[in-house]
Length: 120
Image (cartoon, rainbow, N blue to C red; front, side, top):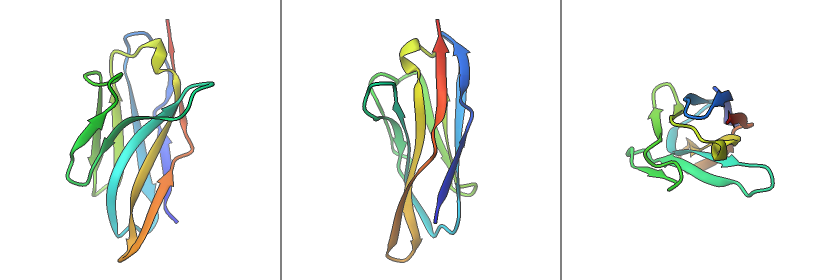
């Protein structure tokens, strides 16, 4: 069982910054894609940013140029640096990680979510 623990959410003013961190705990043979998603009230969960094992990054158009995703394969963490925050960035942010716990045994895990609120 791979568990993800998120931290770093909170309340910030418009234009401010926050850094989210997600740590993967458990027996992990290899890490694959790591990413962040978010869900605002009344809306569907959407992709924010992902990073592959080869460190290719994909960003939602709404956050490109403001957010930066990074990973540390030794620490088994994925971070999201969020700058120039806007009220529309307010949401619960979820970490997602996939990989394998042994040869041929894949996993996909979600974090519990961390609230980000941007006040105007």
